[in-house]
Length: 320
Ligand code: CP
Ligand code: NVA
Image 1: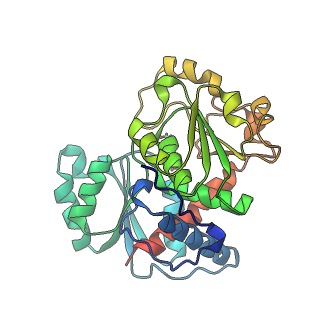
Image 2: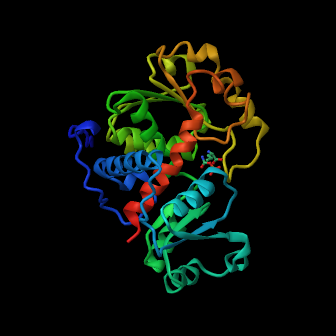
């Protein structure tokens, strides 16, 4: 059943700086209003940051970062963002906790509040595990990437698109490549903001059927294996690595995806003012050529910077 038809223009939205969900686990659970709240909060905090102001929103708060996999942007932008907002954090590599020796998530989660934490940021846990953390910790829980979702990245990317294009609705985003955690989350984020999405992925590497079905309730989504067709009339061309966290290394997968590399020639088929986006880290020359990555249409470093502002917004909205 199609639930679209009530879409709002983000520029006419009046933020209340409140969200309806106490956690940020994936975008399927957020309303369009919630998404806009995160984007407006990021905008406000970025404006303040640029003016040299850092509101002490996290004074006397300590945030736990429990990571089961490596990270550059997510970890750094949270650690710096928390400092800038006057708070404190503890970085906990999962492998150095008793979780790595079989202690249950339920027992681990139960002690975070008792030690005085105010929120929990998790990387490389399944949706079910994240929900268990939320249930037994009683704290706001933020997904810093799971096998099929990266909500912070996509909220941040929607913010970056809004900054560049001045709107979200009716823009066309073409995603080229593996139907991974980024593709799954982009589908839902763009669909809920009334954007048009075309996905060019090989048949065996498409996003999950359930995510496609859910996103199709909100927007028209085109699926193709033809990259040239996908980028026609696109305002944004987005790609990501061929092998994601948790995926097995596969030469066969890389071989199949080679046809899905973003090149200058492919970019020339999109709109002349199309943006090139990538969540990073990039495998230079593999999923995108260096000419595109370092070229004038690329906004990848701005995307990376905006993770700082969006992460701060997430904490500002969720931490009580
Ligand atoms: N984009 C992103 O989440 O980067 P990291 O894996 O470096 O955190
Ligand atoms: N799809 C990538 C995203 C990294 C932020 C991965 O999972 O490695």
